[in-house]
Image (tube, rainbow, N blue to C red):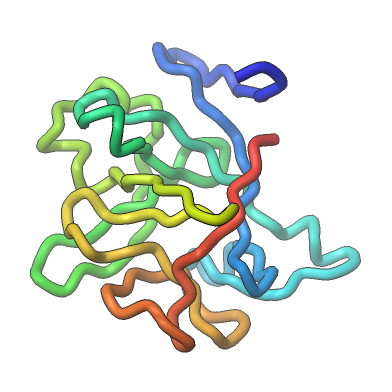
Length: 161
């Protein structure tokens, strides 16, 4: 991975990568009222864009590209709630702490990353068939869907910084 930049997290035993993510409609992710939202950020507002910190989850088959995603320098991780209808939430847990957790403890924080035609998709490990998504409308929360389409965008650009 020549040219990839990584961040060294204090006390981490894993390399934590930093990336930029935005959906195919060019909506970036930013925090609004402690919720991760996708919207069009231009000019001075571009500084609001959240960078995504991620590590591979070594508890899963590497061929599925399992990763744990976080924001705020790796201090808030994306997680899927328990239950049949999962909800995406941010949890105050360091990404480096999840690296050493068991498969059972880290599953709801794990997403399988897949690549097709220049786009990335992120499928929940704890809820197969559910994908990270943005709304077709601007300034709506990042969520999960099992019904992609015009209302729920599941294709993202994912660029290492």
